[in-house]
Image (cartoon, rainbow, N blue to C red):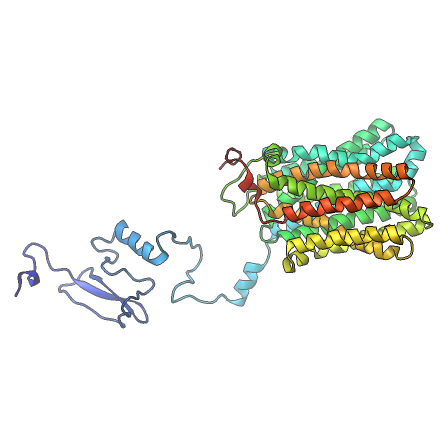
Length: 510
């Protein structure tokens, strides 16, 4: 007997055992106890170069034996999951090993069913979108009656109608900072309070109440406008295009309903313009209820690894922020000009005011429908194709108004309505071009504030060119030229980039 084969006179010879780990695997290691060194073989050894999942490494010890501490466990984890991976945190039954079981149909249904809180959040977002356009559109519907009753001159009435874009531009800058300090939900709650109170104050007698209440209500609208893309990123991170389409469609529909219902409802109830614009406070008050139920906690994205705190100034130093602001601003400019001036353009071509208003209504209906199908378009087509196609619809409609404004006017309105799909596309890009909810809110605030500043110049410049030239050709050619700028901003904004990656390092915090 050789010296190497003799048992040590001091330490007993190690005992080994083989434990079955799979249908064709075995693991050999020191046995825990037993009077003699016995090797028990179960199963068949794996082929050379192969190792069974869940088994110990060759040369490693089994649990409970010498050398089976953190060293052996670390080797086992490295073999099982690789050197750069960590073991997943399993909170449920292990379905990854040989004994995994398929989930039952009931388990699948229960896991895919939205929770009560998710339904509450979706309802709150939809109601918020529905409440944001009636305060703006209802005011435009009652302006003639309001001027007759209050004696406002043209300049004062123009300032009243310009308040929405001015508030959206100025108040929007404060939304990201307010949301970071108060929390997103609490900021939405205060926005709805301002919206409700402002709509009630502006129906009181006197121009101060009219302008002050309108400013307060529109400030609430401006804050909620900025926060909506961030709310979608926060609560629906895997359904951003779909949820953006839902709330933009509801917002457009809310504006169309307010335009068409305000005067008939006011007259049916025997009221005046005060009832016409004041009754929409009920909608914002109802909208406040689900947001109060959600509470004022600072909601944090579940999958976020870090939260950033950029402000408007930080986003202003990014190329992506300016590209999105330019795209949003030029599309809003087109929409404000068309909805404001198209009726007068058609009336000047010989249409009656009733017929001209009906054509504008067609445009509004198409705008609502295109908002609903934007997620499908973005899913099946490249983003640049969608952006270019909508710009092409705008351009075709404008050329049609230049060449034959009266005959096929319905066709031109449909094409221009398709072009307004740039609005939900822009807001979808805002939500997709940020990694976190805080980044989305900051990007949304910058995009909408600068964008509405750009848009506010459109109707004024369009009207100035009409007065200067005495015709509609020059203003329409201006819109065609601005479409090229709009398309350029859109193609640049469509590039897959993230705003956090363009921020300076000192604007991100853990």
